[in-house]
Every structure is written in structure tokens, then in C-alpha cells.
Image (tube, rainbow, N blue to C red; front, side):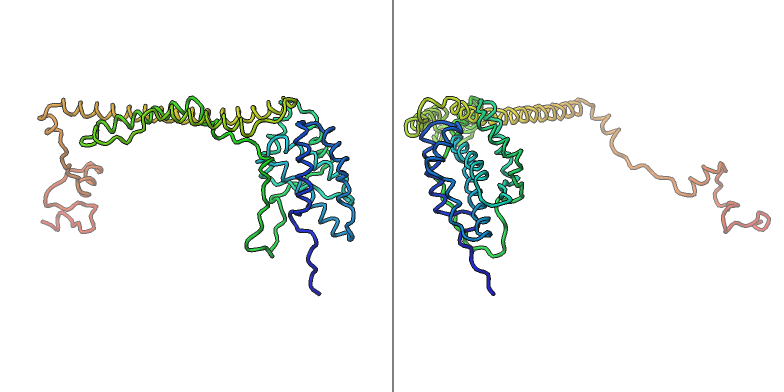
Length: 345
């Protein structure tokens, strides 16, 4: 008897994803990270009824896993902080209201644990006690199932798996452009441009003929990045003014990323400085050696030139070690071919 195909997919359900995005959209409009606001929306939508109507026991277990996996997707990057908070609350609510016993655990891959720890530290620093409390409740209830992969691996896979679309309204702001505005990065770019300009001017036949260097590149780049940040503030403003702690969390993430870039640039500068000092020391040492060789008299150098030294033979070394005088044309007593002196006469 062949196995019947599952009614619900193993990873995501498109209809459930639509309901979850509607719930998180309403939570985003509240401009809050309080669990009280999320629970009010949960009760208003009667979201706990999502588990009703499942006929079989195995199908209920599979659907609970799909629901928890969908909630985990919104708990992880690249979504904004508020959406990730809503994903955490959704994980807690789905875990507590599921009808399957024993309850299905939340699969959390090891690669995603670092993101969860960073999210928790930012919440503690920002004073979001609701977020910390809900996360600790899940940990103490042993609701997490720490796995190597976020989904179960099966042999019968599609050759072109369907990719789950990402809701652009829930995405957080990019901070890559803000990282380029660091003073160390702009200063390094200015130094590289000046060095390239000097090398080009010093090249015979090229300097003064071909002008391929962009003048004031650093200032133009800074103006372009500032214009982009102003456009981003105008096009995607932070909603409302109630959630000041949420803004501090976002600013903290941007500051941490910029500090990380500054730290990396300082490490590179120190490494480059030590390399320059080492190369300069080698150049000075080589120059000193050449100067000392050039100052030495030529006659002394010729007298102390390499001469091939004659290596004594085995016979000479043996005679020297035994302390016996060596006589030409006479056999020694320790040799096998030695003859008596009387016989030789």
C-alpha cells in the first residue's frame, strides 16, 4: 500500500503564512513591543482556533510543527526588531495553545542560536522585560529542540524547491551604508587616492596626459551616502513616537555594526603599520650590509676570499689519532698487508 501524501506541507503553509502576516501587520501598526498589545490582537483574531478542524492525530502533529516553524521564521533576521518580537510572542502563543500532547517542540538550529542570543542581549539592554520574560518561559519549559538543521532532511526532495517569499514590509533597515560613513574608512580611502595620484604623476609618459582620477572622490561619496540616508528616512520612517526603546535597540544595532567596522579597520591599520616597520628594518639592514661590504678594502676581501681547503685522507687522520709517525714507503703494523721488518729486509 503506497503512502498517502500529507495534506499540509512539511515546511510552510501559504494560507497559514497569510494569517500570520496579518497578525504581525496589526501588531506592527500598534507601534509597541508589549505582550499585552500582542495578546489583545491574538484574542481579537481568535488565532487559537487555527488548530481546530484537524481530523487525524498525525496530521495535527504535522500542522503544529508547521505553525511553529512559521513563527520561527519571523523571529530570525532579516526582519526588524518589532517583527522579531512578534515572532517570539507568536512562538509562545502557538506552543501554549497547541492541542497535541505531548506538545511539539520548536526547532531551533545551531546556526540561529547566535542570532537569538544577540536579540536577547539587545532586549535586556533596552529594558524590554516582556521579551526577556517570554523567552525565559520558553527556555524553562524546554520548548526548544536544538537541532543541526532548521528542517527535517528527506531523501525525496524537489529538484527546484519552492522558496518562501519574504514580506518586504517587515524587513529592517539596512546599515551597510552607515558603516561606510566611518571616519577611518573615509580617511583610508583618501590616503589610497592620494597614493594612486602620486604614482600616476610620477609615471613617465602617463602623468599629465591621461586624467582618469576622480577628483574629490571621498567628498562625493560622502554626499551620496548622506543623500541615500535622507531618502531612507523620508521613504521608510520609523512609525510613531511611542516606541522609543525600540528605536534605541535599532540604534544600538547600527552602533554595534559601525563599531565592528571601526575595530576591523584599526586591526588592519596596526597590521599594515607593523608590516611597514618590518620591511623598513629589512631595507635598513640590507643597506647597512652593503655599505659595510663596500667600505672594506679590496685587498682584504681578495685575501679572505673563498678558498678550497684540502681535506686530510683517512690514512693521515688515523696516524694522527694513533700518535705514530708516518714514514713514506713503510707498512704499518696494524694493516692487514703488513710484513715483518726482518722479512722486508
